[in-house]
Image (cartoon, rainbow, N blue to C red):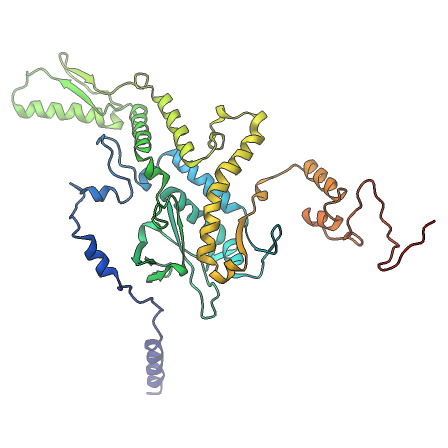
Length: 437
């Protein structure tokens, strides 16, 4: 009897625990907007309506036999995956700095800010910031949209940056306001306003609805996927389309159909090596074009170049080395930074500032910048020559150069060296004039 009150109190304490906070459902304006849109044509997957194909793939091609381009189907193409992987990987491996403008040409880094920690160390409990940024930018490049939940506490401080799967996030609209329905990392169904979300969108014609470059060029990407499937069939040695001429010498229809099934299974079974056993008067004629007839290798090479152009990625970054040699390697690295990374990284920086920083912080001059200098890995000789020229320039102090190399400061190393045609008087005192000789 002594333990019963303790058990009762334990159950009461457990049942009185408050439920996790959930945003209220958004209903204002949604009914009128849906009514104004009119009735929606029902659709299934067997005979889809026209709007069903426009959800992502940009509509079915007029050539019905081409594969429908979806995110999952597109990333199975090695070039599409390589482009998204290169862009997301390089933007994730460089630091994302937070700066504050102090004048027309000067900016200082801001270290004591929650966004600095969330974007460079730990974005959510147990989730490294580099992993979260890679997932966010990869979805942005592949799907044209990426989402992250960025809630704040009662004091207005950022608490986490939770990446949301794009296919599990719905965008809702109430006039000019936007809301997002999704499931967060804790498994809670939420509806959050735009001020609590990071919404990366690409090629948004209305400013909100993102589109992937694969969606716009869906027919070209579908042609590349069809070529990949043709190459897979040619490499497997299995004739997928053929006609069989069989002599009618069988006892009944069952024997004829049984032999036809045996030959068809031999043609489509990879373990049979595509070598069927047929009669002396039977004949098999392939309906597939050979790789030489359809110029398969040349077409696949052209597909790779087109996809690289869609993502603005230099072919040399995709190991298409016929486009790059050692002589122009430095110029290609510059082109990759200016044409590709600055293009995609600029969208990421601008839209992260809208979702992570408040309006007051943005008006105060806070902004994000990727530190692309981290991509430059100079040799030891090049690094020392550059630091020696900067210290003797004068451009850097000796201690600043030692800090760049990870060394401790030295006494007297905080003064700039004079220009080569000048000397420095270390004994001069401020506010006194020296007598001329």
